[in-house]
Image (cartoon, rainbow, N blue to C red; front, side, top):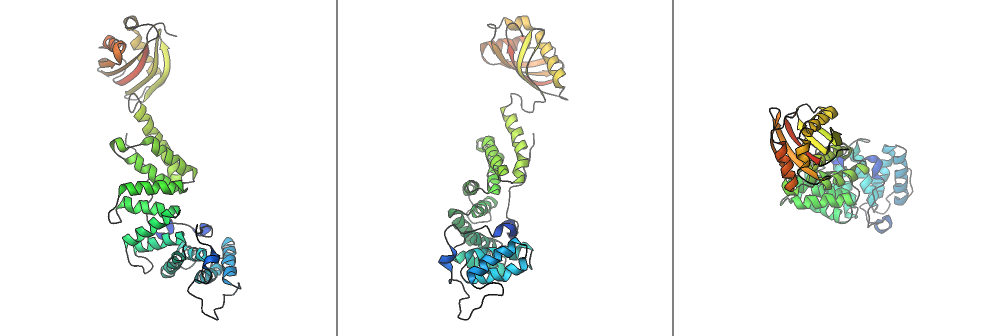
Length: 358
């Protein structure tokens, strides 16, 4: 069966990284505003804070308040001032805001904010800077190698989006010496840091791998985690992965006629699976078992009562054309069933119980 998962999350635009609603929550794991205050670019004597705040720290705090209230234009100059006075979080938020569409977009100013924030140690800003370098936006030179270094450093310092983008550039071949294993490892690391898109991407790679590299159970684990983290594409993909797992584990791949256990005319059959034209439903299953029961007496002579013979057969032209079974008992039952008239052409497998039926 042909199944197609939603596309692996790729780098499309800078705004795929975050939203304005989330920008105030992104903080550097290693740098505090107190460590950086005064290290920004606008430290000349006589520098005056913009209207509405009294110091860089006050500007940073009030900017977040304006952001919460949806007053984006008012927050912009305050973030700008705080950024230039060493507040890395404000640089990050400024860059996000300038890419968000909530204020007049300014890619050059956003790139400057990302650069300054990254210099101050904010890994979210470093990821933004990496994207500028990857795409050549905001006046940045296009430099995939430098971009990858930014993503790698951010990922190593616990920035999950850095891990996601590091994985993506290796997966898509946007970086020199692209390595599929680095892509897989990076998505896994991003997932461990609770990035739903990274979890989804790792699941896609496991699902779409070929041969022994395919790991459907692993794909299900990563998709489930991505869905738990709110990544909608993963929630939509889980049923497709479940179908693939069911097919993998099925006695008859693509079976459209199934019954767990049923008895007809004294013959009990367990886990009947058939792939037949049209499916035929429960009545079809009972019709198949009824046909098998015509040779119950010979079937029972193949082994001790209670033995379950695992049988696989193919029917064509209204008769079983070939059959095989597991072990001595299974081989005996398969031989008994050869050329038996059967109601449906197709492929079936079942556990046939020898002895009295229930």
